[in-house]
Length: 182
Image (cartoon, rainbow, N blue to C red; front, side):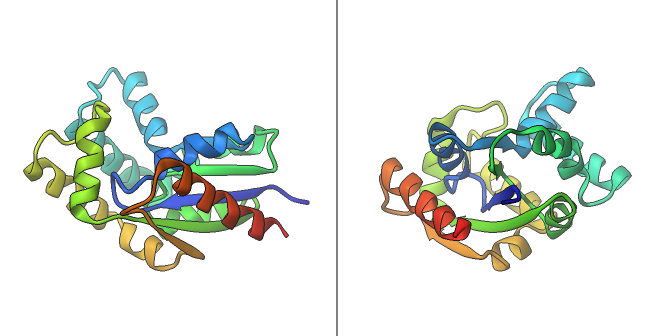
């Protein structure tokens, strides 16, 4: 069976990274799109603040096309030994099109309310996480600007993550993927 790429999409703080980490424990390879941008920032000696990473993401897309961030992870996907590669943080249909050139792609959207997402991000403490509601709204608007709404709308399946435990969230995603593998 060819490799399956499972793209996790959703607004910041919806639970994509939590799912990716849980699926990694089940033996799947997980690749984070934001990590690819953070690695590029490090390579360029750019401070990984939310604002700087946002600018870099937009610059990469402007110079190299809307699928630019997906281009950064292609080798990792191809070289993965896993039959399922989970991509954490797909933001546009152009990125999905880049990945479809590699192998079969399924899109799993994670949805959570604005309040739930802000709560998750407030406790996560990653370098680019918003420290207040204004920064949170700016990040949401930037994500919407690069086309995340379209990738969410085209999802093959959607999980609502407003009242799920971490185990329930990961297990729901795992069951969906197992169904896709049949």
